Length: 301
Image (tube, rainbow, N blue to C red; front, side, top):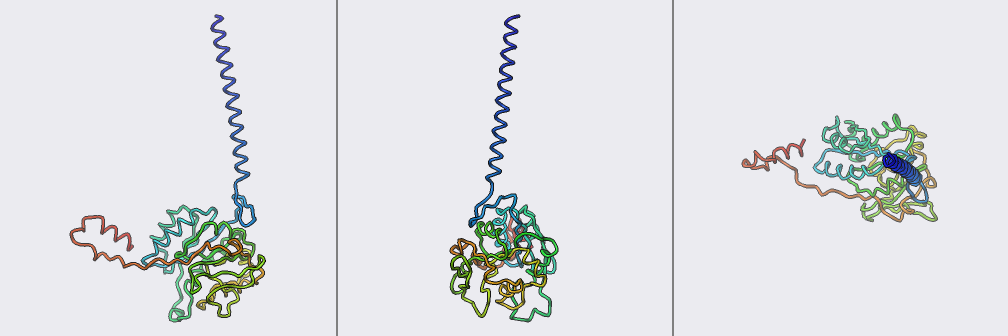
């Protein structure tokens, strides 16, 4: 009887000690999680931004059907998938949206809006028309109707992007600017910065432009867009960026240089080499019962 009582006492002591140890361990884990949550964030150009407070980023991408479209869109999508709190607005140059682009967007798991727009017939014979004008306009229309806070960026699907650029542009108060690589005869397009302020532009095509920037070289806070309801992308070739920024009533002193005060390149005008066009006629009769017919159907759909 005494031995049984002692055994029960020992077991009870062990249970109490293990319970206390478990409670202490859970408390330590909770404290560690609190510290991690407090520390979670990023440091960008002198700004500490908590992830939960990151402003949304809206990326407008015009696209059109071509041999390299899926390669370009896949590469770009897998860059954007690494960027938190991003909404991708993809606008196809077509009468209706395509299933193949929608499938790609679904695979990303990102929030997206899939639109389409075409050039009106009266403009189709004009050689001085800029590319992607009506696609970008459609994206701007959606933004004005559906988004009120955040940052807008125009990102073509055949460019290459460093994800740090998307982190940095979230700090945009009015309009931020940054260099673009692999473009025109200079091989670079960049704002000229002195003492932290933009004083001009280093670009191979000046031609009287107030804002001699590339479409990939700036981001705009949505408050600025909403403050100018009539602001839009102009039609004139080579003056799309300049006309848009001027329509937002921006001045040089409003521009915020990013990318270490424009001393780094974080976006490039890469161009996918144009390949041959896949054609089912390339399949020999002996291979009709293989994977090749299905492969060609999926490529060409």
